[in-house]
Image (tube, rainbow, N blue to C red; front, side, top):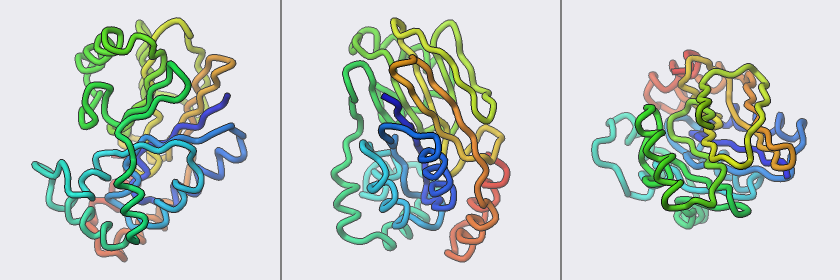
Length: 244
């Protein structure tokens, strides 16, 4: 079973379309999305439709919850403005579909999908201490899990202690130990923050016990123009070219 893992699309339809075309060219058995389909960029409705069409399993991210009126405390004003604008672009049935998304999903036993972390959907697994604590939490509370896929940070990561890797080539395959727990962040489709503007996703091969991190260029200028034309904060357009 080959599974394409995408996350943090953030209403960037140019990046999403490019990534889905790349996934189709590679060939997989299924596609899963770790949340944050909306927010920041200019095409939430198109992205919701494409994710619904292309993905076999989808979970909610914090931007979906914000759009539905949850977890908005402490969020920067431009981010909330983009969320409120996004809600106005969505059809009623799209909003209803987003409201039904679960906060986590388990594929075949042993593969867990979350947005933030296994213990908190809004937690960022960005620091070594947080990664370590979540590793221990899963070993204690859900010992059957051997692969935890998460998003939220917009930065690709493989953590299979003692190995922790944050930098990858444009298409880098890494062998996993099926007997040991691994954490995988596929990076962000629509707003990478690891210093590279290339859209990011990953492919898990369950038979070969590998994870492949893939980066791909997409029409960034067109995506920036869409953001500005929609009247969203110019910083959202600028960061697409910066990868931050």
